Image (cartoon, rainbow, N blue to C red; front, side, top):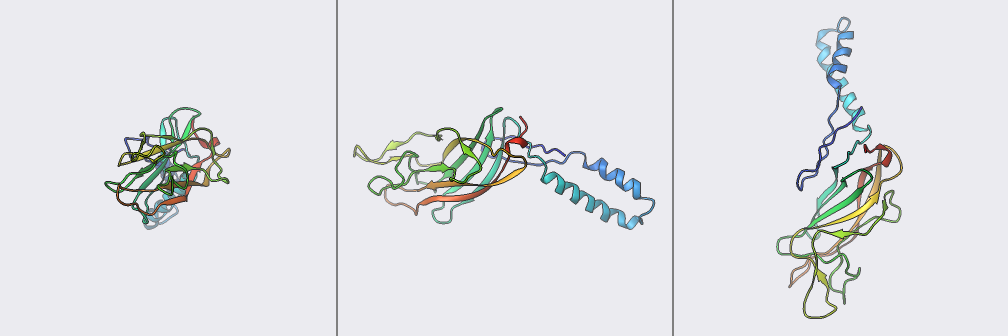
Length: 219
């Protein structure tokens, strides 16, 4: 069995498995047994066979092709109302990236990825996309940001912040050297603030994800 995945379209990455070849397989099986099974059981049997074949396809090789993407996780943090989505992208053969998009509440900004973990003089927390030490994936490059950051206030060592609105961080990675699906984790850090107040920071939050092994990905 093979799976086809829809490519990323705009800001809505999707992964839609589409079983191939199921109809004719079911038809052959039903024709073969049609003479010995009462007709009233045919519909039940057809439904059962379809479920079995779909189950087999769902654990087949992932088939993330070049130019495609997979949505790994998406949630809104209940502690600070920051919306987060994480996807795996495969822009071309041999290259894989983790992308995390952070959307703070209206009017709030996030802090630069280059901020110290404890902020500057206790102010702010960096926006980070990281792999835990026990991750099956491997980071192979620097974390990059979709927008630039600016210094707040007149102090020469003030914290760097992003403009109010969404920020996407991108991390180049190597997939686990295996086949099939792999359970893994991603670590996220972020803090949303305005000029007057800040929400509770999220520090090194572990997000469970399932990623395809490197030997399962279609070039």
